[in-house]
Length: 471
Image (tube, rainbow, N blue to C red; front, side):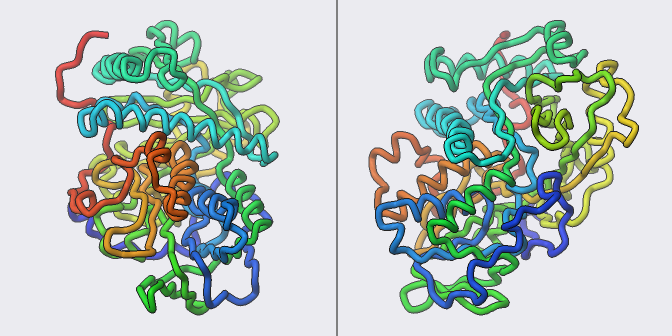
């Protein structure tokens, strides 16, 4: 893993795979608010995904927002990074990391992360609803179908610990367990140890962020797509951002670049490691419910998982199944997916596994493939992972005016939206006790100590080698 974490990070590939969500591209895809690149700005945000778009909206909506000149740079088309390439899931799965977080941070901070993820998930769908963003927003239940006995026992222990920490009436601690036979009947997934269901949602994150960017532009954002930032350095009490179209001098710069961040700030090499993820969209089999599956899914086994959403009724290609994962099915358990930023290609082992996965999980409940074929689309995207498994948020140590919100561990849809709100408050000088009540400051705030930790890969995937209590 040391070698993979040390691979120098470069700019996004110019011709990436086209994700399901980006076909067709949005009207803002190639947007440039001004023909020429501005020479100065109050704030330059690099990255147009959910983090950058949410941050821009929060900054421009503050009391002094109208006096700010905010420029957003995107290397490719709008929202063409991880947000526009994910699996469409707004799912916390907080019990999967809670015991690790409790050991590392204590119960209070671990509980704060659980509540934060839940509030962020709810906030995304609430915002889409209140602002009429047409993004196929769906709220309901998800189910984790578990195929490994140790993972099954761990789930029971983790949920009990969450309910003890938050109280059983807290909505973030509401879980329901299903025995193997119940799961086979209810969720059409025979052969599991059991299942866990809880609140979640799905949406087109691409359409959601395009909606955010529309609102930002109305408030004065200058969006410049196909304008990669190639270098950032200090100058005259501020920062200069270099691009092929010219340079911008800004008072502050925000790196909302997730897995690509070390390209612009090399000191983060190894502190944010890219990981390529694979996703596929499948036409449903002939025996899948005509009205579509009732929940979203994850399929959890000893050393990995897949996640899956059915496209809701009323959406384009309703009933389609979007499934992602398969990392550990590649050679060396997917080691070579770490450190790569190549989303222009796919790993043949992983994508071949995903092609078979839906029929494997649903078995006889899948039926015959659609006459047009099972696979509608396959693509990849680049995520960002940190050594301790948490985002890096705040002003980079000893770099006044250089801010960051990145490294969301493939979990950005229940982290980034409110993390951006927290960063906007920090930038406005409102980094106070009230913020610390809801934001996991101790876990998420960037510090020098966090940047020295050694990267070991994805966390919270395997069941730990500890003695588990019987459920």
